[in-house]
Length: 339
Image (cartoon, rainbow, N blue to C red):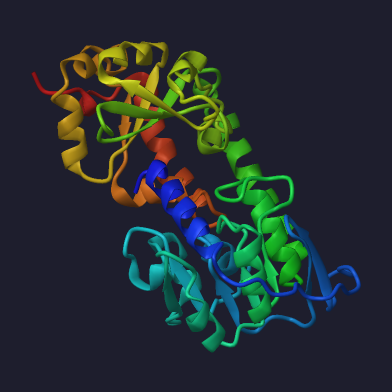
């Protein structure tokens, strides 16, 4: 599912949820004392107190189940974002889920408040849920609720900041920091082991096209998985971004030549049909990276892992993507379109 669509879904959800009646936030309590409860977590809507170690955790955001599972907590409910995976859990997180079968919540016109309340949660995690004040208040009336970081976006913000908040709420701040450090160290190690990646211009794009345009991701959160490996995102694509949009550029097909500023093109293709649609475009076939085989095509699983950008999906991205990037830098003839 493209990021364009996932953000649009979130905005619709927030707009509808804003109609919910407000309720008071929980009272304040002593600050986190090295994992001892009660703990106080500061986020975009102030402070949330978690009085005791959570036993029944509900994830109402799009990717928080991965954070919980990475911290050895199996939620009683998760949210289906996209992919229709069993238990809304992708392959990279299934070992951590084990035999559990959490309730699956759906992203529709509003949060499923009645279903959430019936689960009797003692913590609601919403660090990647796109909350505004009214739905936050309503969720907080059900159980202590932790929203997105105060200094970050409401949705799809930095994975490490989200992980840090969840770790604090679970009384596992130290474990969360170790998890974050381990993943960042692994990216650094892969970058050091692949000096051929350093400084190479690369563009990450969705496929197939959307409304006559190729969607490319600008330098920022959506491309950190590339830049942390040493690649750079050329700024030439920025001029095709809508005003105020710092994440996605919409490149009309007649302007695909701008992609010649990249030595490597990474396409988030969820099936072979998307690649076929790309190769049907004459201007695509003329790109230097295409003629040289400096291409990566994902499958649906790898595309999903990149979009999730979670503590569990990022190691999967490294395992699967780095070998493909090695081939793309030197040129992989298997990716060159047939005559």
